[in-house]
Structures are given as C-alpha cells and as structure tokens.
Image (tube, rainbow, N blue to C red; front, side, top):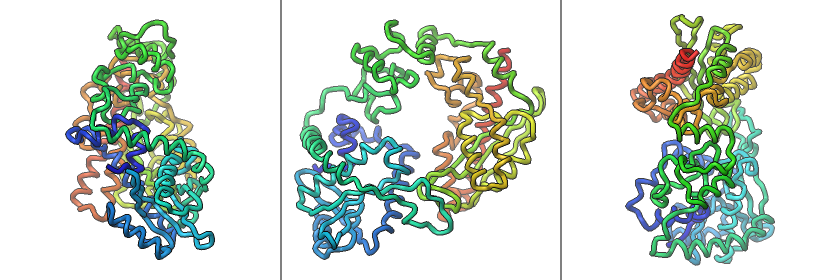
Length: 498
C-alpha cells in the first residue's frame, strides 16, 4: 500500500475513516460523494488544467504506478521545462505533483501545487495546503530530487474576465518555501504514524475523533464507528461545532442524547431553546414577536429567490472566480393579504450572461413600495449588488430592491418560533415540513441549491441533448417556484397565529 497525498490529508482529518476505506471495501456505499461534492472535485480538476497554461512546453505523465515513475525519470533526465503529474513512489508513499518545473539557472526543480481556492489564507485551508505541499516535499527529498522552491498556485479573486482568459492575472503564485521547510519535520513524523496506522490489518477500536466535532464536520463513516451516538444528538445543537469546550465536556461525560444534557453547562439562548423544546416536545411560539415582525411588512409582498451558478474559472466576461451567475429567479407577488398571488419567473436557457435580463425584469416587476421577502436575504442582496456592479445602469434599481428586503428567516432566528422538529436549524427545508407539511421538496427531481446549480450547467452545455435540457428547465422552474411559494405558505401560516 502506498499512501498518497490525498490519503494523507484524509488521515489527518479522520484516521479511522481512512482505515475503513482501505480495509473494508464492503462499506464503499457509505463513501459515495454527493452530486455537489463531485462537482467540487471536477472544478478542482478544471482549475488544474487551466493553470497548466502558466507553464509552457509542459508534458503530462499519463501512466500510473511504477511506469509513471519511469516516465517521470525520463522526462527529468531530458530537463523537460515542466512535468505535470510527475510521479514518485518511495518508502510506502506516492506523490503525483501538479507541476514540477525545471529551473535552468539554479539547476533544480521547483514544485507548484495548484489549488482551486480564491485565496489561500482567507479560506481557512492554509494549514491543509501546507501539509499537502510538505508531504510532497518529503517524498521528493526521499527520492533525491533537487528542489529549489515550493509554490502554491491559487485563483485571484480580484481578477475580472474580459474576453479570453488571462492566465497570468487569473492565478496568483505564492512562495511557501520557508513555511514548508519549517513544517517538514512535523509532517514527516505524521507520515510515519499514518503508514503504521493504515498498514495495520486489525481494525482500530470503535470510535473516531470526529465525535469531538459538530455534525457538519463528521466523516462519512461516523455512524459505523460511533454506534452509540444517536442520529439526533448533542452534535446537532446549533453551532456546537464552534463551542468546542461545551461539546468536549459532553463527550467526555459520554452524554450523547440531548434529553440527557445536564443543567450545569451554560448554553446560548438558541441552544438552550433547542434543548428545551426537544425535552418537552412542545414548540416555543412567541405571538408578540411574530406579530411585530409581520406587521412591519408593507404590501405588496414580493417573495424572491435566486438560483446561481458559480464556476471556479469564470466562463463569462465581467465575472471573477466563483462569482455567481444569476441564471434563475422566482417572484411570487401578493398585492393585498386576500389577493390572488401572481408569479413571475426567469430562467436563462443559454450559456450567456443573464444579468441584464434579470435586472430589467425585476426592476419592472417590483414596485416602488412594498416588501421583498427572501429566506437568508444576504444571498439575494449579494447577488443584487454583483448585478449592479456589472451593470452600472441598474445599480440604483438593485439598491432599491435591496433596501426593500426582509428576511423571513428572522422570525425563526430570533427564536419567535422554535419547534423540536427544526432540530436547531432555521433552514426553509426544516421549517416548511413543520408549518406546511403538505408542501415538500422530497418528490422533486431537483431538491436543493447545489443540485440546481449543477443541473443548469448541464442544461446549457452543448453536449446535452435538447430533450434533456428541456426536462432540466422544467425541473428547475418547479424547484425555484417552490422556494418562493414555500415562503408565502410559511408567511400565511404565521399570519394564522396572530
């Protein structure tokens, strides 16, 4: 078994999870990536392919295993200007480098690790990236490769595409040599520990360190390794992953069930309410608070929801890496409390910028008075600001709409309505089944935002059959339409309480 840099990174995240992947293939169905996770992997691969344009006359090693090492050695002997996927296997470790570049002046090789992130330091992943590079540095050193410098290549979030891609502006290159050399001894010790741990034929004892993390940070095999933790546990308390001392205190005392949480731990109001409604199985409903929120809304009410696509490599002029393309919106309009709702929708069916069409239609559809209702309004507000920045002639219109925005999620974030079935969440996907159980996303072909985004990319791809594109378009309209109708339905149920 040769440990790759990906396996090593996964080991650092959760050692038990990686052992299970390697030694219990019968559990593979638990490791399946979601559609959104697969998309992230594909985007990372796309970024790497584009970044290769920074290194002229590069040659890719397409072989695998020992043959890849042989081809790498041949290319290095020829002083090939740049080698993509240069491969080295030594001491039970394997490294495939994104770009190994010959430095003729200093007669050595420089290593470039390509990352699909906008900014290395702002992502919170700097530590992981350095471990990744240090792992490769160790393998190269063990393989007696003379290396001069170690670089991280990442996307430039200040870059705005105009016409063809400018790769020198799209990517930023950071010299991380000093940090890598300083980190190398720690990483090499971790590598040896990983090799010992992962080569063991005996399954490690039950449990994994993810038990000390919030639910969103659990590994894919958490339920297998931690059978004593219920499906709804202390790990699901709101923002408990950011309250490490509280979570650790519970785990150390083997308290996993929310109903067993003692009274001697100080929780936030949101966490305390979540615990209380779960214990009592009765909701908290603050009628006065709900009334104050809803009576502040001026008619007409405009229920607005965007769907966006944010490619790592900007595909359209005027866009930066990961900037959102507002390919779709749904707008349900309620003129008076008892009026029949009207519905306006937009879907861009071609791979071109929808910004002007979106801005024009929203500007003409949303009047000067009233309230624009969104769920998590910062998203819609951000998209509006980006449209205004791209189209100065619509900046005032987008600001006007933003000034009319109200976040219906505030009713729930402010704890005016807390239900045990929300499980600490204020997501519309949690609130809707409780307040309006007859409405559901479960039966839809598209049922969440990441899937909608990927589906749109597939729909506008030239490789997609027209019949398939037509079907995706219909599914997108149903999904986005439900998002805004669901907000109306929740508002209506809240009104009944007053």
